Image (cartoon, rainbow, N blue to C red; front, side, top):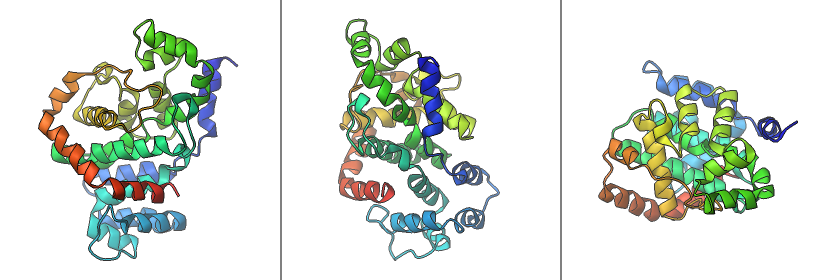
Amino acid sequence: MNTIEEIISGIDKLTPASCVSDKLISVISNPHSSSADLVEFVKYDQSLTVILLKLCNSAYVGAVKKITSIKQSVALLGMDKVVSLIMLANNSENFKNAQKGYDLFQGELWKYSVSSAIISQELAQEKGISNISMIFTAALIKDIGKVIMSTYIAERFVAIQHGVQAKGLTFLDAEKEVLGIDHAELGAMVAKQWHFAPEMIEIIRFHHEPLKSSRMDPSLCVVYVADCICMMIGQGVGADGLAYRYYQEAVDKLKVTAVDIQRIIVRFREKYDEIDALINISGS
C-alpha cells in the first residue's frame, strides 16, 4: 500500500457522522419541511437529545427559559439554530485529540472548527445568505482531513516545511507535493463517503482555494472569509499557520468590509467565554 492509499484508508478509522446529519441537512433545505419533521429525526436518539438539550440551555444560546424537549427547542430557537447545535453534538468525537503534525494540542482543532462554524453562521446571516445550516456544518467539518493527515505530516514535516519556506508553496501545495494529497482534498473524500450534499463537499474541497472552485458561490466565500477571520484572531493557527494564499476576490464577492470584519470579531470576543463553554459541552 503506497502513502496515498494508506492515508485514504484512514477515513474508515474515523467515527462516522451519524446518518442523522445528512438527513437533517435535507430537511432544513426543503422549503416544505416543518419543525415536526426535524423533531421526528432526533427524538429517538437519546444520547443526542441529552447533549442537544445541554447545548440549548448553555450561556451561548441564551434561551429566555429552560428548554426541556426537542420540540420546545425548535419552537424557541428555530430550525437553523437547532440543526447547528445537533451538528455540534454529532461531530465532536473526531476532533478531540491533538493533531501533532499540525502542532495543535488536544481540543484545539475542535475549538477552531466550532469558532469557524459560528463565524460562518454570523457572516451568512449578516449577508442574507441562505442554507445557513449547510454552511455551518461545512465550516465545522472542513478540516476533518487534518485528523487523518496529522501523523503523516509529522513524519514528513521537514520536507513540507522546506516546500513552504524554500519554494514558496502554500502549506496545502506542500502537503500535495510531499504526500500526494492535501487535507482539503482528503476532507472532501470524507464528506463524500459520509453522503453529504455536493455543495458541502465543494466547500470542504476548496475552503482554502475558493477561486479553484467551478462555482465559487457565496456559501464557499463565507466559509473562506470566516477561516481568514479565525486566523486573524489566532484560532487554529498551528504549524500551517498563515501559509495560505489570500483571495481578495472571495471577500469582494460577499461585499465584506473592514468594518464588517471588525464587528464580527468584536461579537465573537464578547461571547468568547460562552463559546468556550459551548465547545466543552459539545466535546464532552
